Length: 169
Image 1 (cartoon, rainbow, N blue to C red):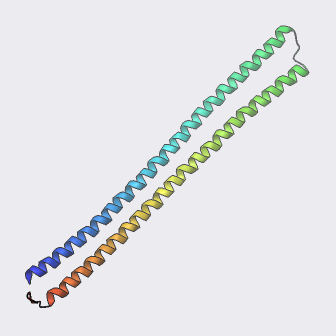
Image 2: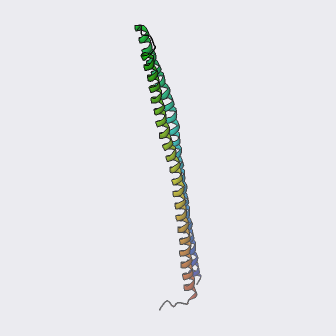
Image 3: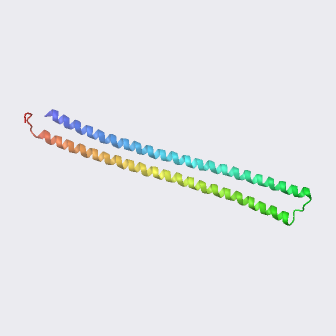
């Protein structure tokens, strides 16, 4: 009878250990999924910040190049004796406005691109949290199921220990 009780106890211990191990593995996997989503989100955010700095530099370089080009045009007009009144002045003003509009369009496109990147970073992080929660719930369900199965086995084994069996039957 003590062998049967030991067997039932070992069955219970093994079942409980298995259930705890499954839950622990699910928790580890959930933590890993959450950490990975945070890492991916942070990488996207850093990329958006780098993109912003690069766009600012590019806009400044474009403005400088446009300013130099207009200065060259003005110098060419002055050298040829054209007075910067009327049509030539209007052309330069229109060109300055068009140049600035091009820069603003470039900046707007960059801002929209960064908004999408930040949205994607936030979405990735939320999805990672949802995935981690789902994995944790699965681990909890496996833990409860494992404990339940162990309880059923132990109850069945205890019932069998209580019965007197004859080995020859």
